[in-house]
Every structure is written in structure tokens, then in C-alpha cells.
Length: 456
Image (cartoon, rainbow, N blue to C red):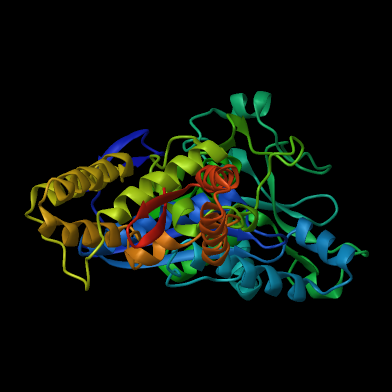
């Protein structure tokens, strides 16, 4: 039986969907004002894995991942660029989809844009006002009264006193309490007309937190199975989602909350101020996209993920070992779930998506294939496909240059130059080229028919 670590309960729990055989899952997506970074890559790949495994387990999944296309940063960036907010968001949504596809991330069933759901947000704010949770503050912003909601803090595990003492919150003049948060932002004169929607409280735009509550309930209902996102969203975003949704609908919002861990770079938190901030596109210039996916999946989703060139190089070598075992495999075969390695693989993923243990099962399959059990190579490919790996032609992967490395043509040219140097008895030059290729991860094999090469 599938078990999921539920952040709300702070323990692994048996997964029991609200409706037998069906799963509803909402994941907080991107705010589209720039290219996606490694943190976004982890969210996309982790919950792509979750979606794949739920479907492989026989569930009918309805997967929603939203897009925030209205936000202070978006407004500011569009103004700086001299373009409309729609132009900016369309451009970065297209880039996000390109990055996701490169990483083998399947599209969610629904990808709602916040600006298409303002009417639903207004309805929810109106309900919250009617239920006594919302009020109009000074400046005509509409705020949520946190102290009116008895369960506030249950996701983060902190009392209101703890939160007031230690958490960073927006402090705005006119709030009844510093922890109160904005549901509807009254329009400012310097903001463009495209972000000024009419409302019962005057023209303005929605606050960030209300977006996900409205989109989630509209597409999945007032009560659904799984809500996911990065660990950084646990407070205040997800805490506020619970307060809004349960305050409006008077029922439990979500049964299972999932949060993936942070991405660190060389053991430091990824940050633009530290100069260690990497976009997906920057990483893919240097590393094959499947290597990056494998690198993300090799760590447990709740653990910190430490990015470094050394770790990516190690992931490339490990993935190369998997693909090497697939040489000669043609066609696709279904998984034999009764086979011992598949039993172990399934048990691992059923245990809170334990991908490190699942990958260990794949490498045990490699060992078996290398011992002569060639028939298991098809099983290796089939299990890899369950998690979005190992579906390329092995020769294509093994002969492909790592992003930023030597192309096949460049390697052939160097091998030819080395052959010419050997014929001229210029052994110093021949050795230099061999060493240069070795440093680039290219292994040369001299034989009666000439020199062949492969990537290490």
C-alpha cells in the first residue's frame, strides 16, 4: 500500500483517496517573470514522478499545477522591459514549458493561469467576508483576519504567538493584526490598467494566496486528496490557503500535504545574492537533460538536494552505466511486477516515493545483466520508463556529447589527427591528443581495424 509523508500530520500515512480509484492533486507552480531555476526543476520533476507513480499504481489522476501570472514582480519586470504583462508572462510560460519538456516532465492535466480565475477569487473573498473572516482595511485592501480561524498554524506547527514573534510577514498599515494577509489589493494609480479588475471593494487585483485556494477548489472541489509544493511554501502560502479554503467552505481542504526539500549549491542555499543561482537553461548548456532528471530523482524528494558539478558528473556516469546495460535492447516490453527487482522497486516507491531505493533496484538489475542475465535488460528499461528514464536508444545516449562537451564531429577530427601524428611517428603529439580526449571523458581503443572511441 502506498504511504505518503503528510506534512500536516508530521508522519507517513497510508494513502486512502477520497474517492476509491481516483486521486485529485494540486501543485503550486511558477510565478512567470523569469526563467525557471533549479528549485523549479525539482518541483516539476518530483511531482511528475508522483503523478507517474499514481497512474502506474492504477489510479485515475486529475493533476493541476497552476501558473501565477499576476504579481508585484511580474508588474515590475514588465514595466522595466517596456512590455505588457501578458507579453512577459506568455514568453516565460513558453520557456517554462520548454524546460519542463526537456526534463521529461509530462504536462499536468490542467495548468490554470491566475488571471483566468479572478471571478472565482472574488466569489471566495465575498464568502470569507460573509463568514466573518475578511475585512476592509485602511487603504481599501481586503484582508483575512487570522485570529478568526481556529486552526491557523496547524500546517507549520506554530502557535499564533510563535508566528508573531518569529515569522516574517507583510506588515501593512491598517491591518487588525500583523499576521493578517491581503486577499484583494486595491489598485494604485501607478499600476497599469491590465491589472485593475472591478470588484465590490473597488478596482484592484487578487493577493497571491487566494489564487491557489480559488483555482484548487474550482478544478478539484472544496476537498481534495493531495496538495504539493516546495518546502518554502509551507508557511505562509500553504498555511494561508488552508485558512482561506476552510474558512470559505467550512470543511477540510486537503488530506495529504507534500513538500519537497530545498536545492543547495555546493552545500549553500541557492541565492542570487550569493552568486550561486542557476536557471535550468544554464545547467542544460552543460549537462544532458536526462542526467539532470536522474540527479533529481536519485535523492529522496524530502531531502535537501545539493547541486554541484561533481554531483552532476557522478549522475552522468551512473546513468551511463544504466544505458550501457541496455545495449542491444530493442522494442518495449511491459514491466513484470512479479520479478524480484520490480517487487523491490514498487515497495520503494510505495514507501513515500523512496527513489534512492528504487534506483538501487535498477542498479542491481544492471549487475544481473552484466552477469549474463541478458533477458533482464528489458525489465530494466521498462522500470526506468515508469519514472521517466532510459527511454532513448542506448547508442544515441552513449555517443551523445554532454552539453558543453565535444561533439562527435570534433572527437572524430581529433582521433583522425592522432592517427596522422602516429603515422608520422610524432608520438608526443599522439599522446597529447589521447590525453586531451581522456580528460574530456573519451576512451580510445586501438585495434586491428583502427581506433574506436567511446564516452566514459
